[in-house]
Image (cartoon, rainbow, N blue to C red; front, side):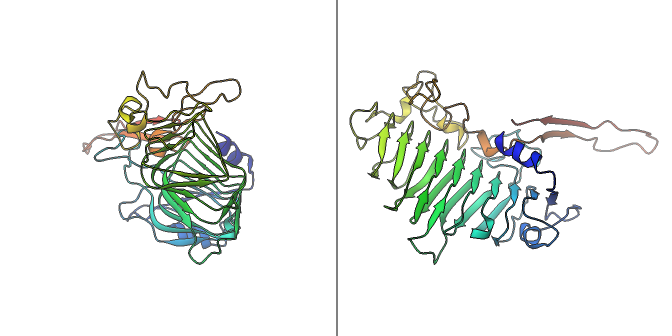
Length: 324
């Protein structure tokens, strides 16, 4: 909700429609066209609609709000019925330049590369891999990045400062390994697969399904692991079978919802006087299935297949939801 308020309070910002489907009358066919157009100003919003072919790679050098439709919308292991247009907004490679500092990106799918000195980036409700920008120095710092409620994997070798990595399902590598990391909050994530190497973080309320993990210069409390690599004490739990924690069925992200009698329920570190569940669906700001953005969406549209030539009206049914 905080992101939506930010968008609404920017009275000068404009909203632009991006869609590369033939026959659709949008402002731009490609995200790159919109991002480089002089009429699109810093702080503007791009609504990127689902595409059967995906969108072109580009380098973002402007502070923008970019909103896609979410992911896992159709097919095997999906969450059906959330969007009428079940295509994702996929971009194979998006480079985030330091000039993009302050951008907000949500509901997108693809691979993101972030450059050093790219600050105040918010990534929420995306299905992405997040890596360091090729050719960047490992000594460069990224400040105030927020990665929240994503389905992701990440490999950032250079330093993070004041980062928040919260309520994500991390399906691949989780590498936040710089010894210069400072003040990272790593909380309420599910780390499902891949290598884990975290430095300089406050690590709490997470569920680790990985076979091993390395923690350096970190505080580790109220976590659950299927193996035995968590430090003893501080309410950490080791050797907890994953099939006692998760429902382990359904969509790719719904798989990680908690069983009714899961040991992760009310096992987290209290936040604001409330004891949350561990994992991505815990806390007052939980992971949302398929990364549906917090804006109204059409999830069902019924239009007559044919209309008699003598008809003076037709009945069209549109079903919407707010997705707060």
